[in-house]
Length: 82
Image (tube, rainbow, N blue to C red):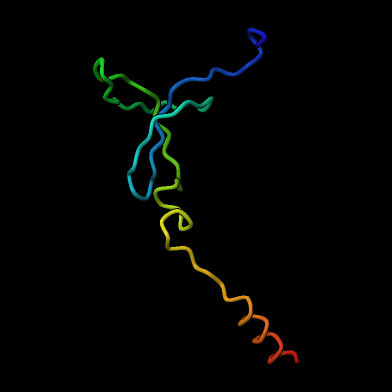
């Protein structure tokens, strides 16, 4: 990698706004908010980024996804505009 042309890639804590679930990962995103995160060598301070949706609250991953009956939709369309 060429030095000086890539963004800073560092550890960041993401927090789900709906559930409050948090996870530590690496990202180029930055934030002025910080959080203490427990590590084996003691707590460390990381940037905190609050996001609207994560796998903890997304309907597909939580099993609350709404499935549309496509055959029923076709029949409804044909009855209306048949």
